[in-house]
Image 1 (cartoon, rainbow, N blue to C red):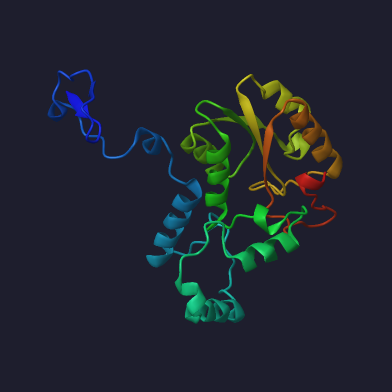
Image 2: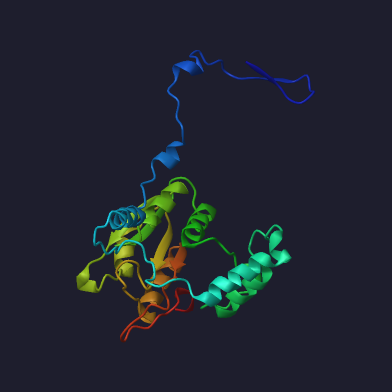
Length: 244
């Protein structure tokens, strides 16, 4: 088979495939997408909702949803935003400037609005971070137990998730020594989540400092998921990894 580039007289010859495409099984979606597991959280939540719809007395502990409706003032603000003609145009790829300024103002780490990117949710933000940082085969250390989306997002971006197990003896907190034992020449990134989903474990400033120093020593990227920073109870105190 030959291919003509534009109007040029130059030809590029490609090997001729002997088998017909009709003889090959049709793959409907990519192998990368096929390898991703269904969200266990959403699967449990869907099952609970189906049982409730059938009249069963089920309480769902799958999805992290509030047990009250969205407050009226938030609903009204959304309605007004939809009515505003300024919302009827393409949104800047990184998000509305006013929103990025507001996020920068309340960030746990001093950032400029130009350093803020608005996403549609945590899953999109986590995946885009992995997609920007990982090459095929790069390993990501993930303290376990973990949010079920993490390893799937890593694999979707071409990386390899590596679970670093914790248990009740350490309060489900990972140490720098454990991370070092799991590190290989392919390790490129560490994923941290404090307060943790699903354990609720909160890292102290000293623990974050030790882990951060270890990551810097080995030239690793760190993605820190701090979405639960306001969900701390008792004597626990939230500390941002970026301010360790």
